[in-house]
Image (cartoon, rainbow, N blue to C red; front, side):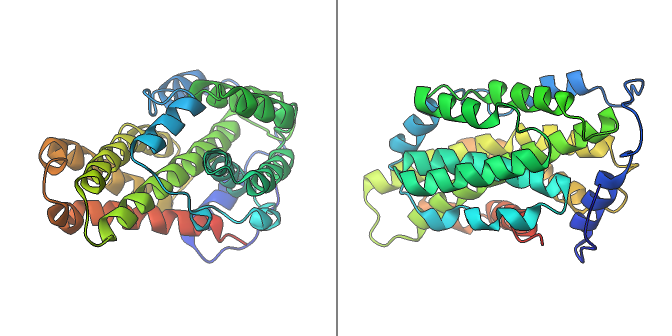
Length: 295
């Protein structure tokens, strides 16, 4: 596979792994990291958010604003085509953006993001029926989380671009990482925007607490599943920055889960001052920055 020499360790590690095994025949003999078990675990991410309608219900519940600046520029898609894992991660990012644009009724931007996603789907060899499938699910408001996961896995297996099961697993992990990061990035920024507002009303404070719970619920179990996935592949990914990032996020997630009953009813000033929450925000932004600025 083709890749560029990235200065960031994350991108170097992704590219090095992406280049492995491209000349091999598909190898299904490895039992070190079973793809079926992984997919099953990945499906546990955000088990309470199963459809587009539920996503919209949550956003409506917290009176979420629509800010197109929170999404990835569709015109960046061409810069991700030099590296398969980066393309997969940004495909995951664009899939979340499509839903957010759909929620914000920004139809033109939504279709630009859709075109960007389709471009990356083609690049990584999962474009078979991708466009039609995505539009049908959006129009029917039935884009289920597990359906997205299984669809991506099926298209990967049908692709002829990958030489081994391990390689497909890593591409899938990159896709899930991108969608997770973008979802938490958008939620976290909506939360921060609301907390920075002056003269908060009771309704505003209620929205902040709801968004806080949504943010923390998204961190767990997502971080654990993705951390375990990267950990299982660390022999191929020595020095991977994303592994240490998810290790820290996993620790923060566990701690924030313990704090959730107290933090969710704390004064907004205390929520804003919580160091673990600030660190979680920053880790997500750092990781997203590395993914969306890849050249």
